[in-house]
Image 1 (cartoon, rainbow over the protein chains, first blue to last red):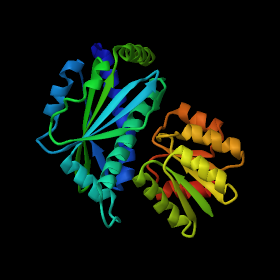
Image 2 (image 1 turned 30 degrees about the vertical axis):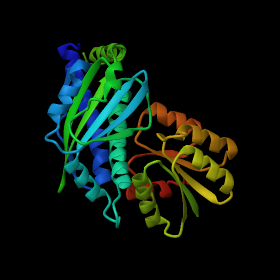
Image 3 (image 1 turned 90 degrees about the vertical axis):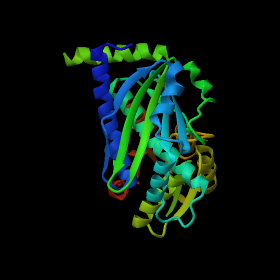
Length: 201
Length: 121
């Protein structure tokens, strides 16, 4: 799918993009944040649901937020948080709130997804001299690891999986960010990566 | 001072209002949850509203369109974009449409203080 050089460059670009996202998350949480170096690998879409089942730890409810991006860089991000992480996140963000409702919880997850996904993809697009527009994110809550109704994702034939662990000074929040693309986008991506490789060497 | 705060996220609005109140404790705050609401509030209260904060990614009407409509209604409107979209092209687009400046999300006390000291608003 990608040559070793293209993959190495993409890894570095994602590291840079995640650096921006880390700074944004630290500001949001008002705490020192570290994001582990994201691991990147590629999957055919047929293996995607199975992969999702392996990345989440156990049978906790899962918050799955999706955000479509369009333009010369196009695809969709999926951000997954497990219930424990959501609880930690909400406890940290709503310190002044007397009563936390499900609406508060959903809103917090969506806003964190928005900041993390938009900052990461936006920075990637900027570095790669591409352009993208963001749609409003949506949220679904799964009682267990059954993602059967993600069939609408079949329009994507490639999945770039970028996974990271977010840690804060006192709270631990584990989030998985996944980027889905179509093969047409992969060709654009390869072209942009080759251009960057040409500029570097 | 009347300030219109526009974001579909309750958390984002509360965060912005919190840091705004540190500098302008007596400000009247109007909240809008999408671009259309913001535009409609602005048309009704344009004489009172001295500053508009506008997110870009919102349902019903996004911030790009709302900015264009508000500026078409009042070319003197003071609109500040608060968004996680840090792409130069997005920033060029909103600045070209008349936004005073762009603040990357999340908002913070330092960013708000810098905005007020800049003389832009």
